[in-house]
Length: 328
Picture 1 (cartoon, rainbow, N blue to C red):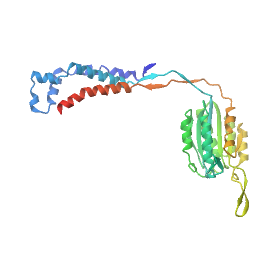
Picture 2: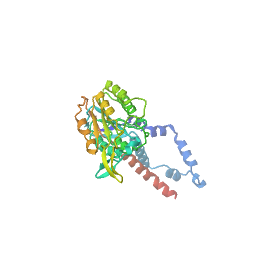
Picture 3: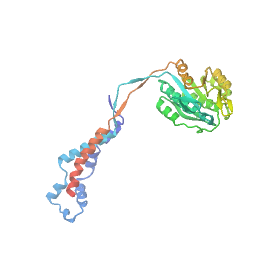
Picture 4: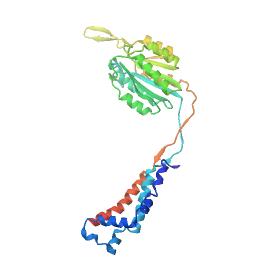
């Protein structure tokens, strides 16, 4: 279907006729004479006037250029067939920990040792790509919590912002309560649908103005379901130069608080010791029942102004180039 976005621009089409009618013919001839730089050209014989006067085909071509320019300025468009968007009615916010402890390299991707944030990025990236019909938002938190991306269907942008995040960007400590509070605020402002927060962290709450449990209670009152993910490998025994030594890279992980946060809000706690366990959240979130919601349709729009604009420039060149050649 063809449409013009700015039809009022077409009112400018008769403007050349109005200008021509408003300026007397003598004024036009006088102006043309005064513009000639050489004194010999001031002779207004019949041959000179005829040469200065544009030919009929040039007048019609100039008029066509004007029509094409006005038509291009009116923004002609072609509307494609209506496409139904997959809409689940679910709004999902990701909260990712960027504190200093996320530097710990106790995960493996393709037999290569990586830190916790790198593993989180890879699994969360796959998770975002599978969220067809969901609106996705992103919160990054450390000492403070920041909204990196509001709720949107543009999962590619959310994914890119996640990949661009870096450890220490939000501070070196961990404000879990503030991250939950920010999610509650944004989801209250932007959402009337099924609301879910996925919170990924490897530590305990060491910063912020709101305690995690108080924030979880408030989330439960607002109907926000929280899924918490504790990131970090289990305790292991390592052989060193001084004999066997126990190492627990997840000693700072407060699993008890994360379990209680999930329990208070009706969610679930996950323990992610490796990327396989970290990916289990896919199956749980797919089991969520979306709220009924009216389907949304999208009609792709193709701009057509380029064609009349290009044709106008081409015809204008046909008018101008011969005159420039004769002067040279």
